[in-house]
Length: 291
Figure 1: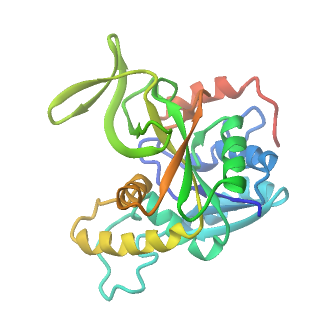
Figure 2: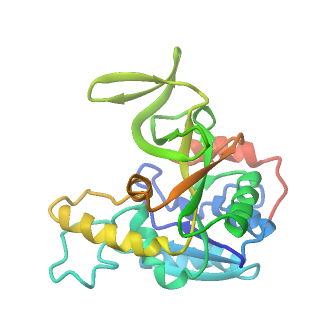
């Protein structure tokens, strides 16, 4: 069975200052997410699902949707702050959706096969999709998932601090946990993150998650159950977000799943800040046009 690629493109991009999901950055004016689709097709994926907000649907379809639709089966799911809350009589007051775990749940009705998740505004490199496709088609099961980990030093922005999911591995290359670290950036004396206790060093080769997960579609039942519990616990917190690593950590800790870590030595590129655009454009300038 061919796997599906789920692209999370509902983010608001407040730090970037615009609709970065469809911003033309490649040499042919390609949006970053078009590279994910291109590499996924080459790797044997059979369908792409975009998770977007209803308010950007027209612009999204006009700028990138129609180009993708001619190459691969394409479907759309919509993520709003009140999506997947039909079971809740009184909806919490908040201005934006509930995070990446919520994004997956919004596409539940379209996911009937093993699938990979990616951020719309991240450039992952070709090898990651091939490795993940091989895993999804040959090793993925209701009890075993996969994740592509990048070296921390290959994922930083030159223009400000970022947040990264730092991965812990056991001796057999399975994930034992993901810890979210914020305010991560390179200093003269190396890479550090900041927390309430101060500044802490992280080696360049530290494996980190960039939301490139490969999972069995049965995870959707786990996600739905965890989301309900999360909403009940955070109804009065308008900024609470339900992240994929939280879901995975819970499943690993409970023994309901294990996650094989697939490593990539590729350079990751993303556009967290407006100034990042020029860096990514320069990196992609020498690449083959895909539109």
